[in-house]
Image 1 (cartoon, rainbow, N blue to C red):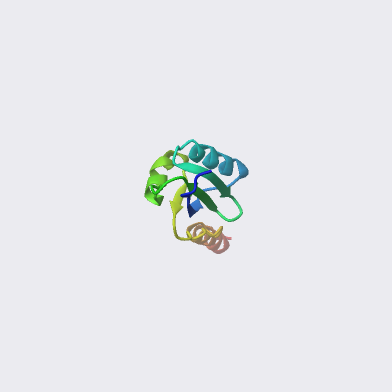
Image 2 (image 1 turned 90 degrees about the vertical axis):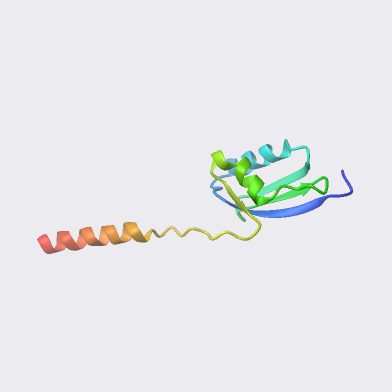
Length: 102
């Protein structure tokens, strides 16, 4: 264990199952600058212990995970609501049209 650990918490958008936690952890632990990684699906976060003064920024993490669909931030990300306004309006319009026709 290294004495000069830097601990960082990042918020992650795009995790949807326990496999996402494992994928993020395995990808990051292979980095020689990282001592420990703990991804949490429930909190949508990843805690990283870096071994030295150099640590990965959210932008660097976003580049690393670009093709996997994860978005990292040092600030809490807005959680997307399950309510989709455009779909609701479309369904409502279709209902009104059908109601008027019949």
